Image (cartoon, rainbow, N blue to C red):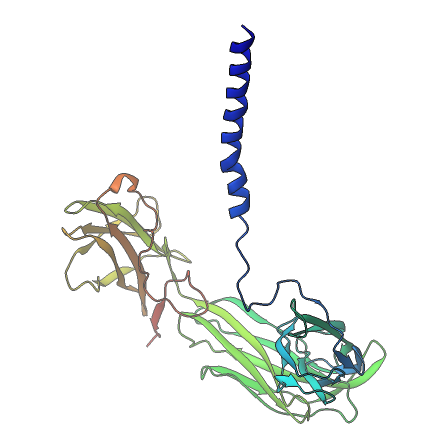
Amino acid sequence: MNTLRRTAFLAAVAGCALLAVPAAAQVESSTPPAKVGQPAQQASPGNALKFEATTKDYGIISEGETIDIAFPVTNATDRRINITRIQVSCGCTKATDNPEFIEPGQTDEIKVAYNSTGRPGRQSKTVSIFTDESEGGGLYTLTFTGEATQINYLSERNIQFGEIEFGQGATRTVDFLTFSDPPVVVNGASTSEEKVKVTLGETVDVELDGKKGKRTPIAIEIGSDYPVRPFNTVLTVDTTDPKRPRYTAPLNGTVSGQFIVAPRRLAMGRLAPGSSVTREASITTRKGGDFVISGVRTGDAAQRFTVTEKATPGANGGKTLVVSFKAPDSLGAFSSIIEVDAKMGDYSETIRLPVTVQVMTSPENAGPVAPQGASRPALPQGNADAAKRTVVPKK
């Protein structure tokens, strides 16, 4: 009886040991071996290089100004020290023209350029220097601090017009403010959009938070003849500022037409080869009223997409586009842009409706959802969800 118990006990211990082996092996394999020649991820603090100072204060500068900062350093050893990497803490800082190594007893500089654009107030940035001075490498951390004040600036960093109804136009005014001595003068302002008019106003005295300076108003006009589409441009202001001669601000918005399309993008779902699918889109007017559809183009040379028109029940003069797609025997994503010419009195507008569909072998998930991986028609820059429309102005 004792022999049987001893045998069972030994068998159980052996089984536990066998089960423990894979787990131990898994723990060991989870840590990959270090690659020869690569520096350790956590370098030890270095002591071969002696910096004149590891912290610098650049004082007070004007926001938008770019300054150069240098950290003198000497190799205090009897062998060459290679600088393997320089890492900065912010995209606003760039390491420029730095040595790859420092010879014994040699003195050199670690140089960085700091751009304060968009970073007003007190700032603190770091620069990490990695060397090969020991087996694990050497790490030096440099810090520079300072303050950027808004001495010369635009009153708006991002100029948003929002939605503008076609034919109405819109005007916004932003100010260029200068509190420097002598004051900065605005020489001109412009955008890359020919149909966006920019006009400089008269410079006047201004006092803000106890500071006296100058204000130059800049009027930005979106004309009543601006076409129906999103606009996305940049206001550029040229000045006499020697440190920052050009100031910029994004400028965007959308000019909307008299017709509303829903949805703005027609996703026809997924379907099997040889099958068909039909989806609808409605067209209404912003202010109500009857209109006619004078033409429809599918932009599909293979004529897989077809479009018919029907009245929208309950809508005041609304129309419904019935879009059908006949799937070929081949698989893939298909897309097109349906152009609809709509006319209301003397007003004409061409509406562009993107459509997408995917033909696949397993259409179980078929439904009015955007095809995964389907190519989408290009839309105007600045508003990826907006259907582009081209307006023919009133005659």
